[in-house]
Amino acid sequence: MFEPPIQRLVDELARLPGIGRKSAQRLAFHLLNTEEADALRLADAIVEMRRSVRLCSRCFNVTADEECAICRDPRRDPSILCVVERAQDIPVIERTGTFSGRYHVLGGAMNPIAGIGVEELRMRELVGRVETEHVAEVIVATNPTLEGDTTAMYISRLLKPAGVRVTRLASGLPVGGDLDYADEVTLGRALDGRKEL
Amino acid sequence: MALRSDQGIVLRSFPFGEADKVVILLSPNRGKLRTVAKGVRKTKSRFGGRLEPLTLVDLVLYEGRNLDTITQVSVIEAHPRLRTDLDAVLAAGTMVEFVDLVAQEDEPARRLFLLLRRGLETLEAGPVHPDVVTAFLVKAADAVGLTPSLVACAGCGTPGSFRRFSFAEGGVLCESCRTPGAYLLREGLVEYLAALADADLGNLPDADPSLSGEARGVARRFVEYHLERRLGSMAVADA
Image 1 (cartoon, rainbow over the protein chains, first blue to last red):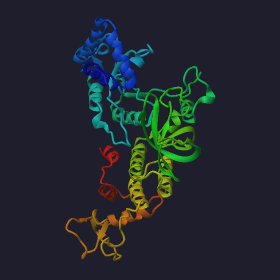
Image 2 (image 1 turned 45 degrees about the vertical axis):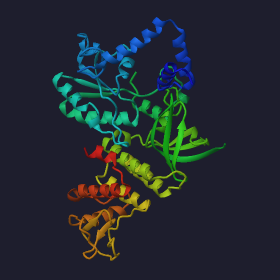
Image 3 (image 1 turned 45 degrees about the horizontal axis):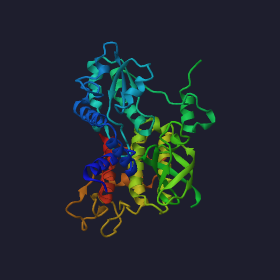
Image 4 (image 1 turned 90 degrees about the vertical axis):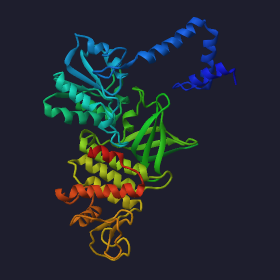
């Protein structure tokens, strides 16, 4: 047991993912021994992040403004929409540098086994955007899992009748990977999605 | 601690720790298996794709203190077509949810396993029969001792065709056993359910559109009543 102010910080830190008792103590003592200004900057960053960040009113990405930077960017092509499960997935796709459209964050995926249905996702908002923003193509970038695939099929069934092109990210072999290490399910999908050279 | 091998159908999994997953399977020999697959959430993982729900796998397990660790997996049947058909996935979701609710750990579940395997095989062969979930629920309920009484009165056992159905009594009731809450089912519905209960999942009688929906509702309520649980997957499918 430590003095109450230290113990309180240790307890709070230990609640973070991947941080156990011992790491929490180490972090707390590091913050105690560091320059006061450094420690306060961390505290301030947490406060500012929590106070200012909210969801983009258009795509539900996280943002400090009414709309996120991607939705406000006039160079982005509004006719292509990339649907992702979580806001964390957006920077991952952005890093590829090959997508120039806008995003839509669903807030999860359908789970036919646990009974997570479409009411819990921002599906109605997606349909609304497809209509009002004159979207020509929707790229479904949900995870290649049973849940992600189910969500993708649902979106396709929902939007295809409206004449929108619905596509799905390909799944297959990782670049730099080794064929004998691939599992048969992934390899099967890679074969299905092969490309003409 | 020993290594052992087993077979199972993956029911579901959830993240565990940094990159691991807890994978829950149904084994014919040991019932519900709770296992850990280490590192499967990393892209480099060799068996991530093999442990997706609805996959029938051969396993090598390392026995741990409370959860067994998966050391090898090979796919027997991945049901790839099923996964590209929304109706088939939703039907499979209900089958798996039911099995997950009723299966117990360390209790052989051979009939339940064979039934689930047959159900998935049928969905894989496609197209989805409108009554496949109804038939599965009635048959699987029977496999775990929840047989609905359809050809004899659930109260006194008198054989016959009755139309009053009580969820609490577990089947049809004759005029003298009839309870106030028993429903009067549509003409032919009880026989329709009885035919589904007897048929092979892969070879069901032709669906009757006028009875199919109600039969599904009765099977669902029957199961939900006796398990005291809502089948979330059916709510998703019926939405």
